[in-house]
Length: 136
Image (cartoon, rainbow, N blue to C red; front, side):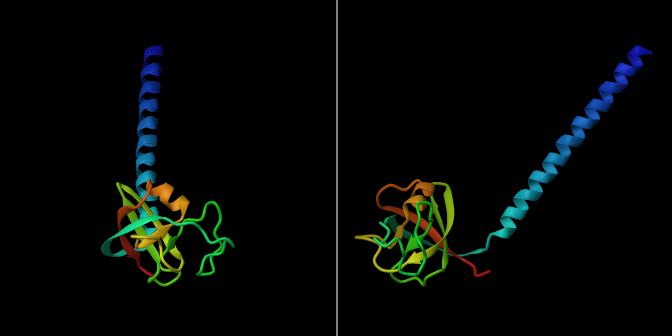
């Protein structure tokens, strides 16, 4: 009788563990799908030279955005304020808006805030891949 109860408990335990594993797999897959669906589609595929740019002395960018120690943004002399870009560098990706106007720096097409450059692992001037984020 004891052996029967022990075997039954083991089977029920195995079924419970299997149920937990299946529910975790479904939840993880569902969350990844939601995260992916929440991001706008990318449009185009370009490369550009980028580097870090210092924020203006009054801590307000030319587009009206306030720059703080965690602001992730892009300075562009030609792209309109507020347009969002996907940036990729060595397997790291980020989505950030254009928050400043004017020249990015010598030899650069875009200037990145320090937090954005850190997130992408960029030191100095580097070539990155970028694309527009579709308007959502």
